[in-house]
Structure formats: C-alpha cells, structure tokens
View (cartoon, rainbow, N blue to C red):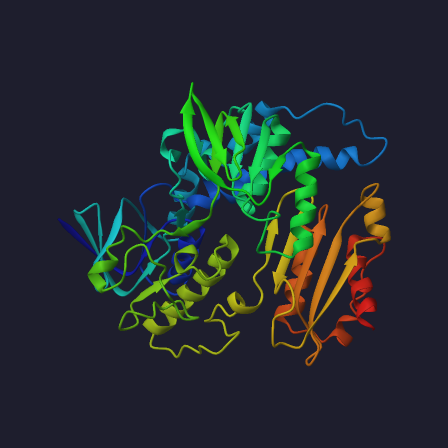
Length: 464
C-alpha cells in the first residue's frame, strides 16, 4: 500500500473533473485527477462529441436540399461519417487528454477510486491519496435500465453503442423519446436504418414545450422514423439473432438492435459513500458552492451529473469552475462569498440552463419552458418568419417562445425550434442571466437579414 499527499483529489476525469482540477491548480493547489476509464470522459468519447458528429452530416445534407441550385442528390456515405466521428474521438485514445492535464500541472492517476475516509481516496485498493483540503466527486452518470422482461436476452444498444457503432443496423428500435432517443433515431435513420421510436407519451421531448416535441416528431417522420406514441415496451424476446418486441397495445416489432434510451442516473454506486454515511446510488446533494450538504466540514465537493442538478456537460463545467475556485480560496484562508451570482456559486443552475437538441429541426431552450403557476408570467409564441429565415431555407418552418416576468419586465425563458436555431441561444441566455429589461433589450437591434430578427418580432408581439 502506497500513500501520496495532495491538496485536492478529484474523482472523475471527464470535462467536469478536468475543470475542477484545473481551477484548483490555478489556485496553487497540488491536485490529482483520477479516472478508471478514459480521461476526457463520457462527453468526449461516447456522448456529446460523437453524437453531434453523427448528426451533423445528415443536417448539412438536409439543409442543402432546402436550397435550389445545390446538388445534394447523393445519400450519406456512412463509412465517411464514421471515419470523421472517430477523428473527433481519437479512436477512443485518451493520450491527448492526458497530455493536456499534465501540461496544466494536474497529476493524472488511472484506476478505480473509492472514498475510504475523510479526505482519503483509495485507488485500486493499493494506492492511498490523501487530500489536505478537499475531495471532489465528478463521476458523472450511467444509463438507467428499465426492468422489462427479456431485455437482457436481446441485442440491445446503450447510448455508448449508438454513438460508437460503425455498422448500420437494417432495423433499429429506440426506446425512449428524450434527447438521446430523438437524436439517435434521426441520426441512424439518415444513415440508412429503418427506425421505430417507442414513446410512453403523445410526443417526444415531454420536458419541453409541446410545440417543440411536435416539430421534432414531424422531422423524424419526414426521415422515415415510425413513432409509436402512448406506447411502451412490455416484453422482449430473442429470435434468430433479432429482438422481438411486444409493445403496449399488442403490436409486435422485430428489429436487429434495440437502443435503450430511458434516461441516466448519478454514478455513485461504487464510490465508497457508505463509509461517510451517504447512500450509494443516490445523487450527491450540494449547495451552490458545490459542497456536499450531508457531510460535516468543508472537505467533500461534487459537480456535474453526479449531483443531479443540471445534468449537462456545460453546466457541470460551470459548476466545477466554481468548486475549484471555492476550494482554492478556502485553502488560502480567504472568504468565500456564497451570494447568488458571485464567482463562487453556480447560480445559473436555478435560472438559466441552456440546452440544444441537435435534431432537424433543432430545439434550443433556456430558462422556463412555459408559465409557472403563481408567477407573473406572460408567454409570447410566434413563428420564426423573418427575412433571415426565408433566405436560410426555402419553406423555413420554426417557432419561438418568450416567457416574460411581467412585474420586472425581464425574460425568464426562451425556446426556439427550427433549422440552425442553436446559435440564437446564447443571446437568450445572456438576456436571462443579465436580467436585461425588455425596454433596454429593444435597443439591441438584430442585424438584417438574419434569423436573429425574430428577437424584434418577439418584442413587438409583446407590445414594444
């Protein structure tokens, strides 16, 4: 058994852990970053990056077909799409991520980490890392697996399989209409699979405004995806290498692969939480500085999916930056101002969480999706029908929603749906975080002719 001394030990070498470690090192603290798999984490190799690499070629081809004069008659070349995706994931080689971390002054440790005491982490049972100041848990999340009879016996995909596969299955069923479900259903349909999407409700994306789910459903159908709404998987049976799926209502599907996309949960099963009185498998509840609330003292922190607060890579990185700065400040004996919107808090988790769904059409949202009961909210819904969108694509179809706090006359939520609306989102995020009064926002004149002209139409519809 070897023992090593650090100021900070970070568990989880994905983007969230990298940011926490980087900020701690910048604050002058000797920091170890531990990962049992690949430095760079889920997002770099199996989630955000490869999924968008799979989606982008299909979106580009569809966009070209909406503009006369562009020769876009040929279908996608799956082999070329896979090759480009693999270039972004470095063929699952994390050496460049390790090089970055070490260049930033972070000590990388490969192995399985468990908390074995206060400020103590044991890696692979034979290497003890002692943290003088803090342990930070950034272990991310893992897929939820529903308890459906026969599911373990049929050829299934997890989200990792769906983003890393290099052969197109002739028949693919997708269970779940969340972000992973709709993105992968469209990506593989455009790559050549016959795709069925199994939904428990009337439309995909149930956590978003209804018009967003309806628009994505229409886009999926246009690509040949068959939607089974108000349904569900009752039982799965293996037959000659295929999966026979019995759906709610009695319908049966036979497919070559079943992608199970039924959500994710915090990865805390095997972290040693029971040693410090916490429940394995549960999220780590944190305050806005990232300190784990149910542990005495200022030594255990967490950021990212493992907290269950805002399970998105960019929000996890944001929280991790605050955590690293908090630990460095406290280690130096400084005061940590935990007030909302200070540099030591992840306040935006409560008010302005931006997310893009990279389907065609795209969905881009931040803040509340609609009126909140008991709040002075007014909803403005309009079509995205401006000169910029008309030039962008023939027959451009899109919608925009603005939710306004009428007492303060500031925006508290925005949703855009349409081709290439992702780049509109940051302006909405700034307006919400900055609490820009609508009468001041009126003076932010959108350039002509761009899709951003929709901002003028939203404000005019509101009455300005």
